[in-house]
Amino acid sequence: MQGNGNQGPPGYPGGQNPYGAPGYPPQQPQQPYNPYPQGPAPMYVVAAPPGMDTMQIVTMVWGIVCAVFFLVALFPCLGALNWINVPLALAGLIVSIVQTAKPGLRARAGSITGISCCGVATVFGILRLIAGGGVV
Image 1: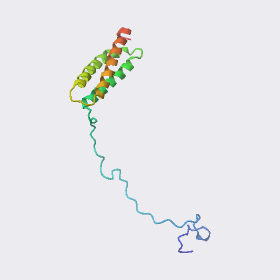
Image 2: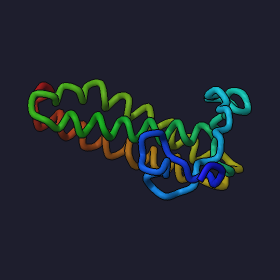
Image 3: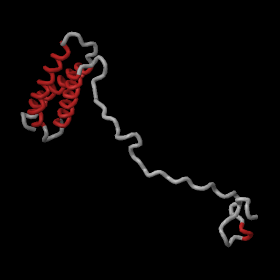
Image 4: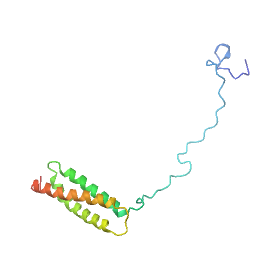
């Protein structure tokens, strides 16, 4: 029973491995953990999608932020936030219209999103200011 690779630890009857399986192959030495196997992660530059200008992304984000501020200003006692939001939305609306009228752009989705969000925030923000007396 000596050389069959089926020997278990001492103290077992007959020196057999209790599971009946042959001995495991010898362990390979483990390499130390390296979180960066090929070096540090590459740096990526976020660029506008093809056909979309960076200013379109700015106007789209501007419009979405103004729309979110308008929704927050709908809560009671927060209507005065529209005194800040309406001028920002008007400026965003003007910038979005100028960006949409720029010649040579194929995709205008970002600018149109900015126009619609800023327009809604402006019109309904003014109505909310009128309805709340400018404060509530």
